[in-house]
Image (cartoon, rainbow, N blue to C red):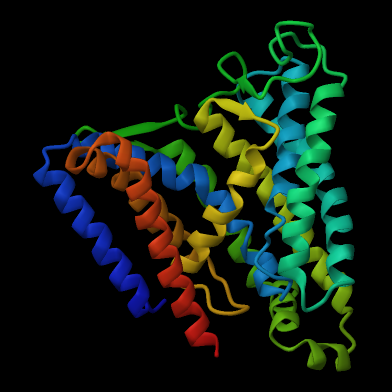
Length: 338
């Protein structure tokens, strides 16, 4: 897979940050260890971009819909006090049928607004969050660790996974190389999801989905059910997003409810763009490279800004750097598609 000029420039900027961090005598082994974890814990959410982009259904601004399916799966698993791999796998299994239902409804709506999918998806995704906020306050869960301590009603904004399946993948298998901790178990799970995605898009159904995204008119004349294929893409993206937030939560150690799903959309879209996604063509390479570049730059920019500037400016500088890189990648992506 050929790396384009924007990705080379962004990679060069990342190398510059690494050199600066080294010159500032930062703990490089810790930074590299954290970068591995940040890459994988966000990686599955970025993979959720691929099916909808390839099917021509937009950039999946409705990512919170799939994330909410994953949150529901985790809450149900916690409600039954399931822990370890049993709790983790149960959360995934419960999230899948929920994600399918959400995905079918989401896909049908997008089929009615063809040509304006991104706008509609953004509205649907962000409008769904306040609806679920109301649900979290009245949800019939009884596990006291999930509920507000005062009153005993309504789910907490942040639920700890320490007694359930927190870090179940992170701690499964850790390999140390020169004080750098590599979470092999977490990486292997990510690899399984990535391989499944690769196999699907190299199958007949996957190629058909890509064909719909590339030339919808030709596929229609060939007798392909366009709407059904688009809905399948949305469902796969929604399921992947549900699994992705479960992987993220077990690594983070908490389930975050209420407004948290909105915070994952733009980083995921930014990552796929930074990776070199062109028009209606997104690949595993784009997702992997983009996630690595985005998360690594995000991780390094804050401590470097803390060292070089006043701490109060660190977050501002980090936002300027990361958003500037996103804008650069987006402009280059647009230029290549015109």
